[in-house]
Image (tube, rainbow, N blue to C red; front, top):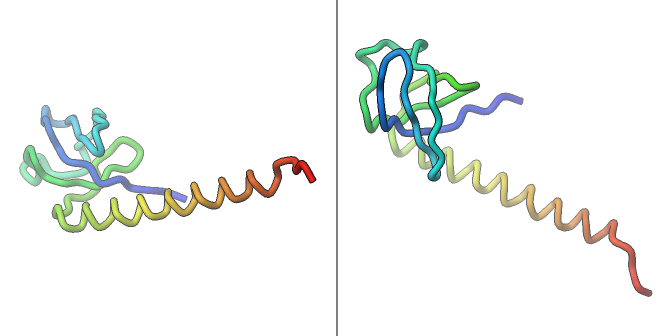
Length: 90
């Protein structure tokens, strides 16, 4: 499965830039987007270290809400599986 992560551009030094999401910053490649298509503050989808699409803030927020929910459910399932596999003191 491939996942693109919404991030916000905080620095541009085309063809690279710095993007941030949830307090984490990463250097990313901007080569897949035209130089004049992005500016500091824009939201983008980052996949394997490259910005692949410019999106609006509303969509970025919606994607993060969905990703957070997926992670929450996975966490609950993992905790449930651990409790089922733990030894019992019956």
